[in-house]
Each structure stands twice: as structure tokens, then as C-alpha cells.
Image (cartoon, rainbow, N blue to C red; front, side, top):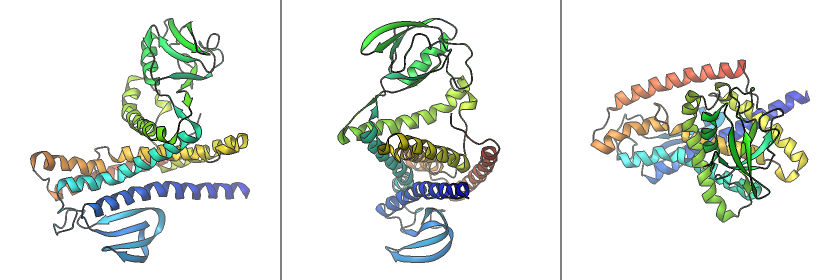
Length: 362
């Protein structure tokens, strides 16, 4: 009974947390639409069917709906079916662009602010340095390297990011390389041979790496959180390239559904509890970090030029902005409908995969 109750509570917490991120996305669209003189016919808490109308303000019905997950923003003429004054379709392309960007930017902003808060509590990573956080037994690194070593060069080439180290190691698999490290502030040179084939879950050298953490102030946190947010977007965009090039094993990366995100969330909750048992001041911070990552991922994913997503709608604005040629609403609607059907089909496949092959954090 205790297990059932804890699982139910975990699911409820996930629905509330993930739903809140979806809600602020729609709130971003709402604020952007109103700021650009586009009428919003309904702003819903949760998804239809509607339970009742809370109130009406500024021409907008604020409603409570049966599915308690996120929310929605229904703008006048968003389907392109009316060109009346105040409709989405009647607004100039720049106002429509700003409205479409409102949701993703809000997610990115929320994620950035959460990261800034975490930086002030935990410290911020120095993205220009690479430190060793763990070493696998019987690996090339086991004899010479220590946890806490900072890798500054590989064969004389500067290592100023995790990406740079990965790129420098790849062409040297099976060959001896010279690592320049900083240990207790003193430079040392270490000879090491990255493995051609590594055991599952281990890298070529057998080390886990990250960026060293420094304590920072609130003033320092915001710009560093912005850099971290943009870096997550870059990592997302580069993931397909790294999978194709073999920099990342296919077993270490995959698309996930809401089911997969929940599986990760529940494990993050467990990690958070374990961290709290060691240091009570860390309570909730691991979960908060995960939610920041999800918010940022939602923001960047919605900006992808895929039909039915915000980025897909933005794509159809480009001809109008650049060439004053508006795509016919009927054509755009059909493309978005097809995109929506494909996305829903892909979502079903991902849900099935996440059920048959649950995600287990390493």
C-alpha cells in the first residue's frame, strides 16, 4: 500500500510540475498576444472539456477544464479563418512572430531563472575547464589520473570545453596521448592510451568528466545561466550529428515520451532524497535542476521548424516577412494537420518504447 501511495504521489507531483511548464508556455503566448493587440477568446486552465467559466476580462474567457494538465490559449482567428480586426490572422507578420515566440521564450526564461537560482545555491560550472569526477577501475585512466584533476591540454592542444576534449580524443583511439593536467594547481604530464572499444557505460579513457564548480553571486548568476541555457540548446541541436558520427552511442541517447520523462523524474526524486539525507540543504535542488532542463528543452523543441509546433508556424511566416508573400491559410493548415498526425503517431511509438524499455539512469 505504501508503494502504491508513493507512486501515486510521484505521478501527481509530475503532473503538477510538468503541467506548470506547459501552462507557463501558454501564458507566454497569452501575454505576447495581448501585448500585440491580438484578441484571446479563451485562456484555459487544463484541457477541455470545459467545466465552467471562472470569469471574463479584457474580452477573454478564463475557464477551468477537466484535464488538469497545463493550459491553452485560444486566439481569435488563429486558424486563419477570419481576418477581422484583432484576430491573429489579421495581425502583421511581426506581431504574429512575437506571439508565436512568446511561449518558447517564456519556457527558456523560466529555465534560465531556475538555473540562476541553483547557481547561487550550488555554484556555477566553469564551462572553460574540464575536471575528472570519477574513474572506472581497470581503465586507462585508473593508474595515473585522480578525481579532481583538471585536463588542460591533450597533445599540446588546449582543452577548454568538454566538447573539445571529446573531439581531440576521438581521432586518437588506440594511440598514446599526452594529457596535461592541473593537480592541486600544479601542471603534470600524463601518458595515456584511449581505448578503441570501451565497456558499456564507459568512455575511451574511463573517466567521468564535468565542469568544475565555483561559488557565484546573484549578479553573476544571470549571465552564466543564460550561457548555460544556450549551451543546452546547442547540445540538443548537435545530438543528431554526434549520434551519426559515433561520438555518442545510440544506447546513450533516444527520444522520449511523457512516460519516459516521468521515469526520469521519479528517479531524479530518488536521487534528490538520497542527497537530502546527506545534506538537508540540498532538498529539492536536484528536482529543480531537472525541471529547469525540461523547461529549456520545451522551449528549444517548440522552436524547431516542424509543422504543428511554434517553429513550424514561424517557418510559414518567413516568405511573408522576406517577400511579402503570404502562404494560403488552407495550405498551411493542411501541412500543420499532417505534421500533427505524424507527431501523434511518433508519440505513440515513443510511449510504447518507453513502456517496453523503461529509462534507467546510469
